[in-house]
Amino acid sequence: MSAAPSNPLTLAYYPGCSQTGTAAEYDRSSRACCAALGVELVDVPDWTCCGSTPAHTVDHFLAGALAARNLLQAELAGHDRVTTPCPSCLAALRTASHHLAEAPAENGAPQDSGPNYRAEVERLLDRPAPLRATAVSVLQVLTEDVGVEAIASAVTRPLTGLRVAPYYGCIMNRPPGLMQFDDPENPTAMDRVLEACGATVVDYPFKTECCGAAFGMPRLDIMQRLSARLLDMAASCGVDAIVVACPLCQMNLDLRRGQVNAFSHSQGGTHHAMPVPYFTQLLGLALGLPESGLGLDKLVLPLGPALTAARAREDERIARTQAELAAKAARKNGTSANGNGSKENTPCA
Amino acid sequence: MQTPVRPLNLAQARDPDFQAAVARDSGQHLASCYQCGNCTAGCSYTPDYDFPVHQVMRLVQLGLKESALSCRSIWLCATCQACTTRCPNNIDVARVMDVLRHMARQAGYAPEPGVKTFTDSFLASVAKHGRVFEVGLAAVFAIKSGKPLQDAGLGLPMLTHGKLSLTPHEPEGNGKAEVAAIFARFDRVAAQKARAHSPGETPGNGKKGGGE
Ligand code: SF4
Ligand code: SF4
Image (cartoon, rainbow over all chains, first blue to last red; front, side, top):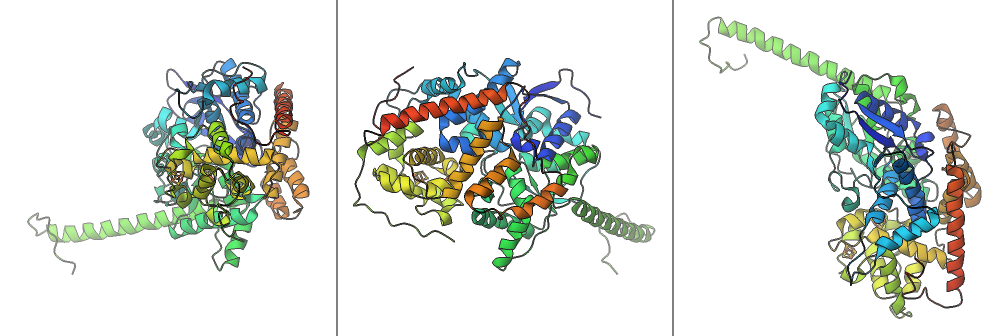
């Protein structure tokens, strides 16, 4: 379907733990979209957990070593770029490569985290830390390496009429110095991909607001409050779906929806049923990929009704437009028979 | 449910080494914080904090170690990076929160026991399997946290949507053993540090950069 580039884009791929379990559909749909768009993914051999948020909250060198091991595995396999769908993994991997690359601080700077960081990480790794390898998100690869135009031209089944809120989560683009991708306050990469897919993307004000992250287990009340806000805002934007790029956001908004709705009820709020697909699932649909390869059945809140509603609205819109055009044409024929070609129509009568 | 803001007790003992230790471990120039409150304005967790994040910064500036290390806020920070992104003085505020959490842990504080249990259970799962085993983590957390039924309702949707994998997906090669070794070395280093610190009082100044 897609024209294979002469020099196919090949990157190491780091799935991340969630993508082997609760977010298997994110992994599957990311792989399917990359393959369809000519990006070749080679799994990081024998990859292990990146440490995610828990590791860095305990110790920066432990977090560094857990992440660096994976960068090293990629580097030893000949890859300098590792791509991952998960923003938490991305942050862990980029934080490690950033600090490993950091030059020794100037005199007078408060701390020399550079060489010391490498030494401490190597002490835990018990081998040399990686030198070059760093990570980029699948979203970044799709928008920067493949490009939105190429995506648009590969779309065979546009999602016309589907109204979506793009929700990026906190750390896909932040902090900007570390992530070096898109705008930290108003990211648009996912907007552009979804527009290329033919969807109608609303201006969602909570693009980067926190969903409650991993607090679903230790402080459910906080997660409920924060995720409820996101759903209320999406509902007020009148969308069919909230589209996500993070397995933690997806879990809070989808699998934990019952808990969030229960909280909303207790506050006199409303019950929300909108689905929360990954952007790669919608992209896969628009590229005409088989649904079985996109894991749509793994979404707790089904996407089907939203797609059906969008299609029905779209059919209705097309029918209305056609009727209007036909009426206009009929009027035009009626007037142009004795008219003088003036653009100005006679007022409706 | 929301946490009342704790009053700032300026009369408590100040620890002049504390600010230096936080600055060193975070790599941040803490004196450049001028208390504009931008970090707090963007922090979604402020309603649950006992000290809003800009006040945590102030506690550190003033060397109010006891208040800073005993507060809940540092355990509830989700590292969402809003503060770091918006600080006009380019302070990596989230990293400062991280460093305070490290210090609080070492000093034995745990005002949010659930958060500590979750973190410990997560890392124990990684140390054991080389990757996080989600279902195992949920089960361990349910037992250790004393909230066994909180997430019981998630089991059925997970099962029916094929999200419940009952066996861990472990790395195929040496990875599991390598990760276990990283944790073993980390525990050794941490134990050494704890021993070095326990006789003296404060995590001292300028003892870094020794063995390279
Ligand atoms: S945003 Fe920066 S300067 Fe302002 S209060 Fe927070 S840490 Fe201090
Ligand atoms: S990183 Fe922590 S302190 Fe900073 S805004 Fe986010 S939750 Fe608040």
